[in-house]
Length: 310
Image (cartoon, rainbow, N blue to C red):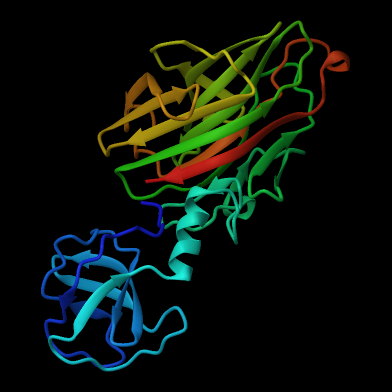
């Protein structure tokens, strides 16, 4: 679950037991109204503590934050939930584009850490490349002209432990020859041991239509089969949102026109194609074309604008 500051109503309670200035587990008398995921701040005496998780009435904390010092505290000392400048900065960094240290593009792994191009590994790189942008997004670029066979350039990274869901928002720049199909790529899940993957893609077709679709791939240069399911038309090929869920039994592939409402276009038993199940996630781009290399636009881009792993 992505980490962000949570706003908690004031709720005065007390310490249930004395603590020294080094412990990071603090038990209070009543934490029933506190969020389980933590990410709020409490004041004990003159010390501010950052609560990072809760189990019943036991809080895991970072001691002496926001310019305060860790200190010893007595049993039944008052514990207050407070809001600090650092807490507000953290909150607004989550909900707004870059008020302090936050990048406008929001790319986060399962621990809430920023995802960059260096977190991904190439499969079938060729002359393709990935670059970090000033706004925090990642652009995957191919300047090749593929005129004979379907070919993908794949970026992948380790997936969270199943069950997981990864959701990505893409801005797509398409090269056209106005005579053949151009597959611009999209979100994927991959099995490391075999290199097999399932690609959820926005398949653009000249002279200006688009379809969301889902395919099995033996490798980036060896297409296997399309997954039966709904062919979802995309009415805005420049912006697309995709989602893959692995519930540890099945895989579900969803697309969205707005990043809010998702439509399931296919599903698969997680070990039906990839015998060991997917252990990696990533995205791809293709310059697929069946026309003459001389009339293809030799630059294809897909920019990852949002990425969350849950």
